[in-house]
Amino acid sequence: MRLLEFEGKDIFQGSEIRVPERSVIEEEKDLQKAIDDIGLPMVLKAQVPAGGRGKAGGIKIAETESEAEDAVGELLGTELKGHKVRCLLAEEKLDIEREMYCGIVGDDENAAPEIIISSEGGVDIESIAEESPEKIVRKRVDPMSGLRPYEARNLAKELGLERDAFRSFSDALFKLYGIFEAYDAKLSEINPLVETREGRFIAADSKIVIDDHSLFRHPEFEDKRTRYIENELERQGSEKGVNYVDLDGEIAVMANGAGLAMALMDLISKEGHAPAAFLDTGGGLSEQRMEDSLKLLFDKAERDEKVKAILVNIRFMISPPDAMVKGFMKAMEDRSDVDVPVVLVVRGRKSYVEKAKQLLEGTDINLYTDVEEGVKAAKEKITR
Image 1 (cartoon, rainbow, N blue to C red):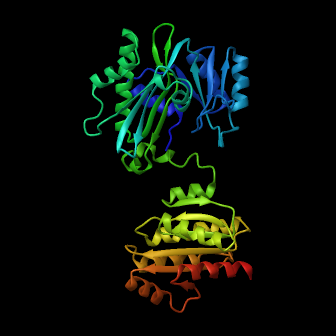
Image 2 (cartoon, rainbow, N blue to C red; image 1 turned 120 degrees about the horizontal axis):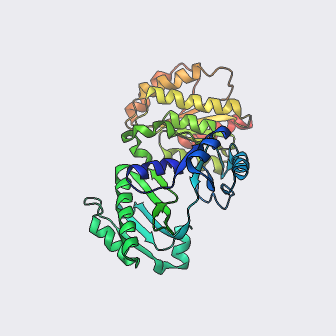
């Protein structure tokens, strides 16, 4: 989950990393308070979870109140980088002497955080690495001991910073690493970390990406988890704890595992058709999650007339068959007027498969124990 810039800066300020004077604008009437608090000139930034906002026209400088009003009117409520702009961040305009880069990223391959710093900032770190690799310093950190203050100072020294800048930069780096650890981040970044002409070091931007798997440790972010998922069905899936991706084919796919779902999609493609949805319920399938998942696909079929069949593949390893069948049947009973055939494939532990077949005996469910037969059955439902 990526935090918005102003949310990241709130965290920076709480960790004593200096940030610009700022105010959040959610409605046009909030502009006057921002002007009173910050003054003019000011910078107005669209708050969306995406980079490249400046190039996309999402950052504007206002020298006068009239220019600020025009900028708010142009940005608020529009779409930028695929996201609706629901609020703006108004900030003091900084008198910048130079820009630097400071970031920590989770290195999954080596199971350790990696620090990346540069004497140049304000652009993508990838561009700096390609054009001026000598200006980048990297260090992998032992996650058991973390970043020590002297290590932060040694890294700042490698950039060749003078005394005051050296102290300010190393201090910001050390605190940024603390944020990376405390918030279970996959990335914490200041780009740029600017030095003003008055000698102040200020985080002019923030980027914090929190590992979704750690959100149970951060209930303060619970209400932010799904706010920028624009697709309503995908948002519902996230809220119900399943992985749903909306697609544009004829057969909606569900399985209790991402690999199983992707294999189904491949088989559907081989048969000359396309998936209408990808839904991974995850392991340990419960009655409620089964019911919610199938209802989500019925909702998809009701909204999208291209959907001609739903294909469900359940592999019984740890998921109990009675819970799965109860949830499945509840969703089938509540399907309302959605007249789309459902094909169910059950595989896995023999005793569990037999139990599921027994529980479904006497129903009109299209039940198969072979995946390829299930895919062909779904295809036949389309071509009838």
